[in-house]
Image (tube, rainbow, N blue to C red):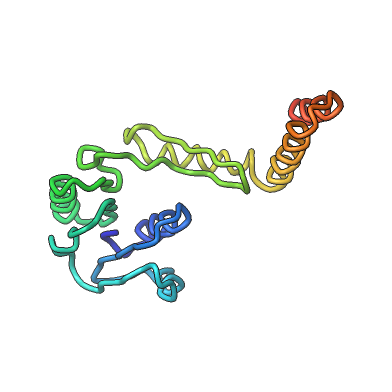
Length: 169
């Protein structure tokens, strides 16, 4: 992760939630929310400006800075090194686009505009939260439990209960 602002913090959290076990964050300054991550052993912090040597061994590079010069440097160098690279809202500098993700329990919905408008993807993610947030988690869990029961028993009553609940949602 190159960058220490709020966006970099959110993207770092997303990497950790996705199971990243080695994350390095490079930035001269860090948003206060990073303080909560400093206790995690899976994150190494480098409080300084980005150096090309920071890319050594990196399989995935995310650049979230407000500097066009840094974004361009990181994007080009990371792509040349063979790493997967995402540079904020600059699709021309990326070889993958990160979608906006809404999570509520087992429900995961990803929204992408293919880099055309990350702001629109975020707006849609927030709308999804209003529609599928809150108690919807319990409905998904109820469907999961019914499905497990239905697959295990094959009973028509279980199938009916499952599809009845699905229609109600």
